[in-house]
Length: 196
Image (tube, rainbow, N blue to C red; front, side, top):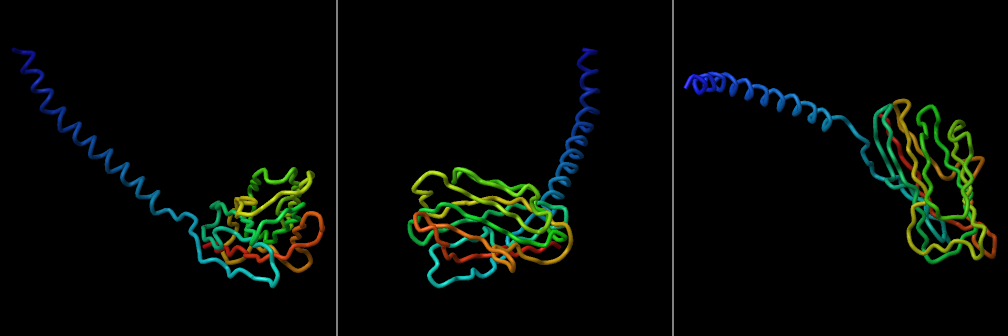
């Protein structure tokens, strides 16, 4: 009988203490998840208008076409190649320019589409990314549907607005068609970046 009375006394004070602990834990965890939800993550923006060229055979464009994030945050963007009709390619000499005081490229991922990918070892130091995609086997790589050419991880360094460009003064991206070894005209969409 004494042990039952003793258990009742313990139970009387233990239940409120446990209830208070549960309420405290719920409020504390709830506040932390609320913080995570309100922290600003990279947000997609309306895309920069795609520049269309007469006689183009494909399009190179970033997806998303615009992005907004805070300094120090990292965001990922993809560069897609979309042929207008089936085409064999020998290679792509890809040059992307940006302001290195404004943005930093932290990582480049390339799916295995071509035999080899040659990457400039000083990625982005001078505000340019230079990649060469080469296909060593004939008849080149056949493209007939949209394909992801690469993924860039970019980090905001300073507040402002800018673009990552596929075409710029003093250099160009070149796509080479199989057999004829000629430049392929392509439409292009640059990436609008806002760091705020």
